Image (cartoon, rainbow, N blue to C red; front, side):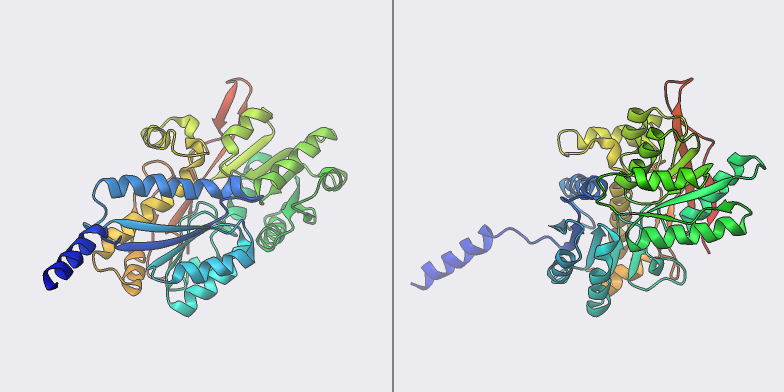
Length: 381
């Protein structure tokens, strides 16, 4: 009888696969209204860490990532945060700003590092950074407006111009463009009061009309893509002749090609895939047949995954929460051209030492998308 029992124990032990060692929890807007912006980060992570695990993992250990869909909704995010923090050494948020508070609360309560890998970087990642909050994404509040208004002023070439602002009716978008309105005045630009657009509006025309009637020469929009581009298309329909600058999310390459509008400028921190860098070809080959979205939607998620891999390598094994937070605070990642420079974090700066921006537009002479100048570097202090 004893022999049988021992045999069963041995069989049970060999039948259960070894558990993944590095456990990460990710919540993303995989479905829902904002999924076209955030779901590609989730897809990039899946492909990236499949490759990592197929090659033997990190420090000899596999990386297990538990994924949850929050649809960009705070209630779902709150439930996901509690679920994902159990047994994880780190959480990743790739969703709308409406989901931030429950994740940051859970991070503080459970002392678990939180990486923002798809949405706008919160102020807690900037100097002096919160010890547990990190952000790899290309767009960051206030710095985006600083670059955008500098670009508009440069394009004006000394002429006095009126700048309008199209914000989405969500906190981060409104706060950012209210900051931009004030900054524009300080820079000697004539600022038109921010126009706030509901994200679910069926018609952007009334908001576009306000900007046109106010005499805007330029309009800056910093919101989810459908609002940014919705206001622009409405301005076109009513005959506005000015120039438009928006933040370039993952949809940029497709949409600039669709609209073919020389006055539409998209700025951001990621190199568009039409530049055909070696890293672009590498990503294209890896995601082929593995993702719903095309390869040129993967830049944000790919950079975030690169940063996480570097942090886990630096952490070693075992890698408890406090140790991974310390490792992240000293990470330095070559983005291989996906960005204008590296991601470098320090003890008090969890955004990056420098951030880089590039502008693209449709060039009729080239019948294609072209950069407007090269990279602009801003030092983060």
